[in-house]
Length: 127
Image (tube, rainbow, N blue to C red; front, side, top):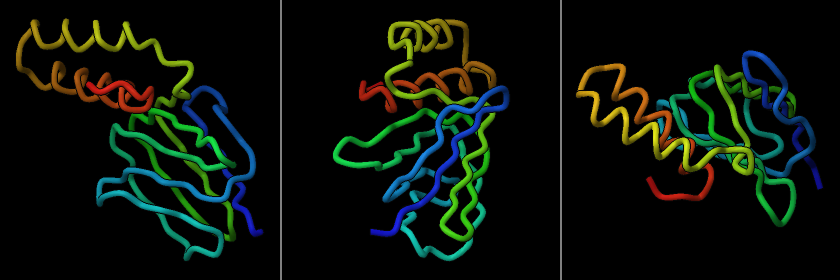
């Protein structure tokens, strides 16, 4: 079976690299599914999730801003911040939401809530 080579990179380190059968990402234009043989593309990633299917158990990551590109069965996900689901501090994300909501309704507070909610979705916890 054909596979994709996937690299998930945060601004300061490589988060994950390997072979996958499919990548699903939330872009500013909507959800995107990438299979081997997909046409080249470039997409913008908001605060959201990326799912990398490597077998029976998908790898899920919170991606906080960045880009996704695909060419020649190579997928590059370049993010400002990226965390694998099993590394996310769920209680910390919930605290961030609570603190941001009590501090006001300014742009910074809304951005904090969006980032924390993306982290919770990636961890399988409903925000």
